[in-house]
Length: 285
Image: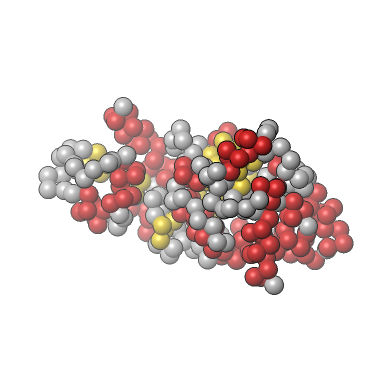
């Protein structure tokens, strides 16, 4: 099984996640290897499923790739698209609802069937990162143009902070490198919401949302290099999401309907409540 994972990593991880394969030498330790690749012992353990510190000469380890110092591509188009969309809603409030229906026909519908019964709703909500009344998870407040445009502006301002940061698998250091889940973790931290560090962990919190009921701010998940949730982004409406991408070397905007992501999409989670949206928008005013 271990050999199969290493073979899989050789094919998939370097191309999709900018990682390298390192062969352990005599005298090596996790600390020395982490220092050599400018990463942490915890990251190497997580990438390789290690529980202890014992290493054997000849053992192969997945480590963050040397491409972490590559200059990232500009992400101006990503930011501009988000800002233009928010401005469009704000400048034409008389026709805002019509505009929203054209941009996000599915997004307007109020979330009404997250789960089939009260018991399953309570079960799903147990692991949510926020304590809030369950009827607030519908985010019907985002049907109001002023709230939706304000939330988009807030997200765009946060995204700007990371537009020149490169993608580095396993990294959580703005300016030096982020990966998909460290990016979403940091964005939501600025909104006052604590998320787990990995995409797999983030998939286990929040309230599940169907693809037809996605709203701005929902987390969208994909299976890329592993069977478990291995990639995550933030939905911004119109079938689009923002994420930290190895393909685009950093901040990027992609479509859920693109061939690549449509095939790998596995679900969405909502970690924003109406109460939290009102709170963050009030700070903007």
